[in-house]
Image 1 (cartoon, helix red, strand yellow):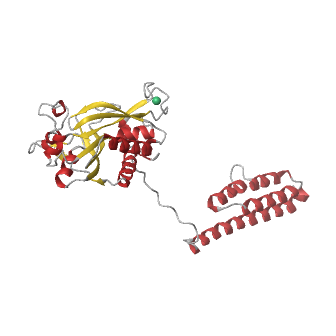
Image 2 (cartoon, helix red, strand yellow; image 1 turned 90 degrees about the vertical axis):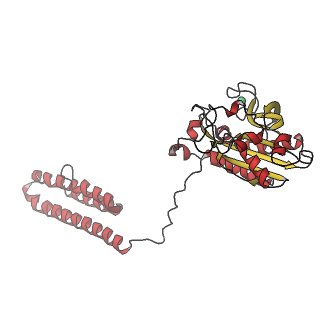
Amino acid sequence: MLEDIQQTARAFDSDLASANGAREIDEVRVRYFGRKAGLIPALFTRLKEVPKEQKREIGDALNKLRDRAEEALKEKTARLVTEKVEHPLDVTLPGRAPRLGHLHPTTLVRRELEEIFVEMGYSLDPGPEVETDWYNFEALNFTPDHPARDMQDTFFLDVDQLLLRTHTSNVQIRSMERFKPPLRVLSCGRVYRRDEITMRKSPVFHQAEGFLVDKGIHIGHLRATLEQFIKRLFGSDLAMRMRPSYFPFTEPSAEVDMSCVFCRGKGCNTCSFTGWMEILGSGMIHPQVLRNVGIDPDVWSGFAFGFGLDRAAMIKYDIPNIRTLFENDVRVLQQF
Ligand SMILES: [Zn+2]
C-alpha cells in the first residue's frame, strides 16, 4: 500500500509538470481528485482494508500526498494567472498574417488579358454599359432589321431610347470618334442580353474587345496578334485556326478556334472529339464603320476581335457551369 502511495505521488508530479495551460491542469485535477475515478480518493477507500497496526502510518502518508497534491495544483494554477497578467502581450511572438481575399476567376482572366495587351501597346477603355442605338448598333453597321436588334435580344430602357449594350463593340465607335488613329484599344466589361440562364448562358456576362487601326494593317497582323494572346493566356503549345464567318462590323470576318485545352488537340468529350474549341470572333474593321466615325478607309485600316471573358475563365479553370461565376459562393472563390 505504501508502495502504491509513493508511486501515485511520483506519477502526479510528472503529470503536473507536463501539464500546459488551464485545461491540462484541470485534467490532472480530475485524474487525481475526480469524484468517480480519482486516484487519490481511491487510495483513501482502500484504507479500510489496511491492518489496524499500519493504519496510522498509511493514513498519514495518504493525507500528506493529498495535501501536497492540492497545494501543487493550486500553485500551478495561480502561476498561470500571474503569467497571463504579467505578460498580457508577448511582442516577440510572430505577427498574425491578415486574411487575404480572393480574386474572381473572371477578374483573373481579365487582368491577365489586360497585361498581355498593355504590353503590346494597347490602352484600356471600359466604355459605358448604357448606350444609344447608334453606338451599339447603327455605327457598327447593323442594319435596322438586323436580328440582333430584336426585342428578344436587347434590354431596352424606358428613358430616351437607351439600351444596355449587347457587346463591348460600342467602345470601338466611341474610341475612334474621340481619338485620331493610329489606335490600339482593349475594352473589357459587362454586356447584357435577354437570354435564359443556362449552363452556358447568362443575361449578364463579360466580354473583351480589342481593335487596332493603323496604316497598312492586314489580316496577317490580326492573326499574329490573336496567336500571341491565345498562346500566352492558354498555353504555348496550342494551335489556332480561322474560319470564315460573318459580323456586320467586320469584312472579312473570321471565327477563331484553338486546340482544345483539355485534350491538347487529341479529341475528347468537351471538344466533341474535334480537337478544337471556338474561342473568339474577329475580322478586319468594315470600311463603312471607319467612314461612320470620320476615318478614311483608303488611308487607314484595322482589325477587331471580341470574346467572352466568362467562357475564357471557364476554359482556363475548368469550370463547367457559367452560373458558378455569378453566384458569389465563397467556397468557390476560395479556390482561386
Ligand atoms: Zn478536347
